[in-house]
Image: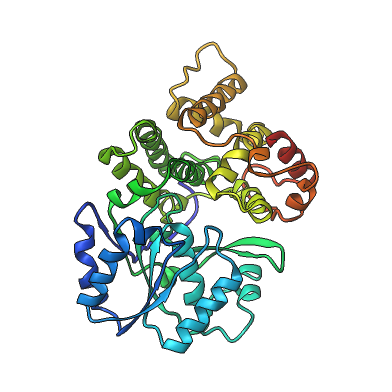
Length: 388
């Protein structure tokens, strides 16, 4: 373990089939007005909306409806939510949905009373909130992002032509989160497996960095093995509660700040994925899947020791009689085989990337000086071409 760190996570999680029983009690800790934020309305078809509104009524809350949060929430939508918060003096934003809805709630929380251009302050300059923020709570219906237990908020600004993430401090972590694995069983197969890869990408982004022997990497390897095992079961039997529960719990620990302790990180796959999502509006987890293999093949030699470890400790590759490069490549081949098995997209052209818009995607990629290699723009273009 190298470096110094502080680990603190203030989110209170209620997990399991009876988790919703805690919602009324949590709501009573906040003021009278709750903004209920959700997506396209699926929660009204599967009964989750009814259960949430019943808890709000029992807690005696005045509810401000804020539906229509899109899968890639826009800054324009954030500004609309901010107006609702100010007009109604909202005390709590209750996000019901997946990571996009929770990311949106954090963005609104930080921006509602910001006296500056919030996009520039948070997502461009990456500054901290200096204004009052609004408490956020979450009822999770789709796994992948880990947004239920972190400060992350990814927002798309179509006017500026960027999709960017901001990691807020613990003050913007959801105060509480309700995690019932059965809620995730209503998600279509495509969205389900996209979430599975989103989790894997979070694990790999934090794993492929650093050279020290790090306890955090051992934890990460266990989470990856759990995800691989459970996802194989869930892809064939989406109603398998044990598998879905294990995946939900893994998703939370994949990005609740634990795995960055004593570690650096990469996150360039996410930057390329964000750019694809901006141009094509494709599902986030699928954008990550489409570029991960070409990206990791591109940087493998710069962090060869970790790719060997990945092959051996995660996939069970036997290294005897093989070069480090052969072992590492076999590990990536195992990753590809698993991706095919669960059914994620392997090529960005399936998501709408073409020769005509490839340069536009490349222009939208934020290149980070982290991980094992800092890319050039030409390398970004090369990886995008190889992803097609």
